[in-house]
Structures are given as structure tokens and as C-alpha cells.
Image 1 (spheres, rainbow, N blue to C red):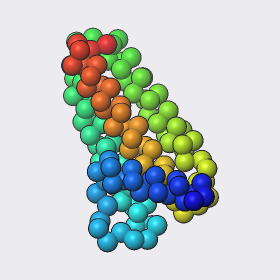
Image 2 (cartoon, one colour):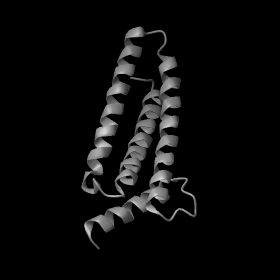
Image 3 (tube, rainbow, N blue to C red):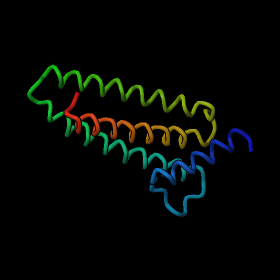
Image 4 (cartoon, rainbow, N blue to C red):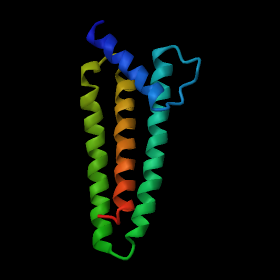
Length: 124
């Protein structure tokens, strides 16, 4: 297998493993790209809900809330660039949107877990 074929296989396995909601009939690259984007969007919605929940817990401390906001904005910028980097070997190919979305989904799920663990342990 060549490197692009391996990356495609890994991306498809990631979609299946991470519970992407790809339609069973998705057979073309655009359909797979769309399914991966939908899964990344779903993870992003969960992140937003998680962020808002924990931000509300900081309502009594404006400085801590501002720091949390700044950290989240910086993390979102990091996620975008990290996902682009992880998919960079596919740049220009039809699989590029899928690999970006898959990386964004994984990073987002990791962030959700991090935030939940941090606040479960009493916050920052």
C-alpha cells in the first residue's frame, strides 16, 4: 500500500471507530467527506455545550472566566492548525477534507474529555 492509500484506510477506520454518522450508502469521496464533516460538527456542538456549562460555573470570578475564554479561543485556533497539519500530506487531494474533519473530531473529543476531567477535579 502507498502512503495515500494507508491514510485513506486510517481515515475510514477512524470514522467507523469514532462513531461517525456516515450514511451506509456513502461510497463516493464527497459523501465520505460530508459524513466526516457532520461528525466533526457534532463533536463541536458537544464541545460548545461543555464549554458553556463550565463557563457558567466561573460566573463569580470575572478574571477566571476571561482566562477560560482566552484559553478556549486559543485552543480553537490550535485545533484548526493542528488538523490542517495532520492532513497536510493529503493537501490538494480529494481526501483532504475527510482527514481534516477526522483530525478535528479527534482533537475536539480529547478537549471535551480534558474539560470534563478538569472540572470533575474541582476546576483549574
